[in-house]
Image (cartoon, rainbow, N blue to C red; front, side, top):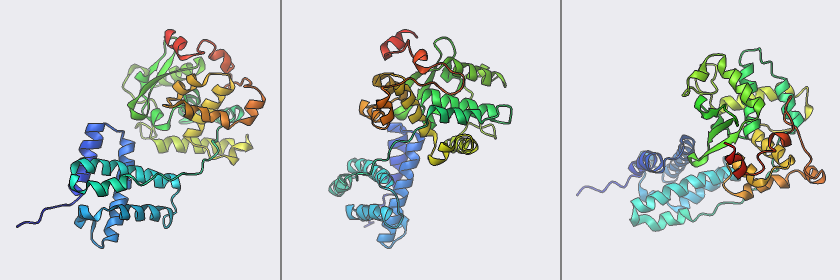
Length: 338
């Protein structure tokens, strides 16, 4: 009698192709993150069971193996608690799927799903002051190759507080130039939100797209790399790092901070908050699900509390944020103005 094939490989394939991509419709970035976590776990399980990955059986994927894998991440690989938790999230999702596909081993899978998330120390949220954003932008020579692109990209990051992938996914059709100008961002879980564009940002975008005629092509990517392809996350990070490095001589405080795309997102939130904008508006602006996430910005600027929410200005020759947002004191009023 032929022995039943209990290889996990067919389930792994179904998990990624059918469950995640087709049924749940998760983003490509989430699929990549889960792929890396599951691949590392299977390689670790193969070593522990002293067999090639292709010879692994479902009985080899135990909770003890999963716990040893997580310990190895923090110990031998010296991964952070955050990385450990991300790998665990991939395992939890996979074995939740397996609980339905293979009820015979559901008990063991539930033990893996029950492995707790480890508490990670909370870093102080780092953001850019208004003068630091201004220094970065003023250091960009817009007449040089890609200078205008970089200036517009960083200005848009500061205006919208968009996540890096949201910026990379933008197309010309994402922008509405008619007053009030808005940009449509597609965030986590493919949730769409409309973010107001300051008049100066809208004019930057209009001029930027008019140069090569892309304004007439709604499906064209908004930002392109040196190969003429839509810019990627690492491309945006490189632009920020190179522009920050160039601006550090002008503004030495930049050299003391770890600055990436998310730093601009935090800066947007802080500058809106310092201008007296309500937390509920900032939550909608950034696309936060929970108000508690937005509330964290109150905790990170003690000077702001002492100044009683003093007004700030955006970078360059831009009016005070209070003036820009005077008509948008709450989401309902803003929506009614569309």
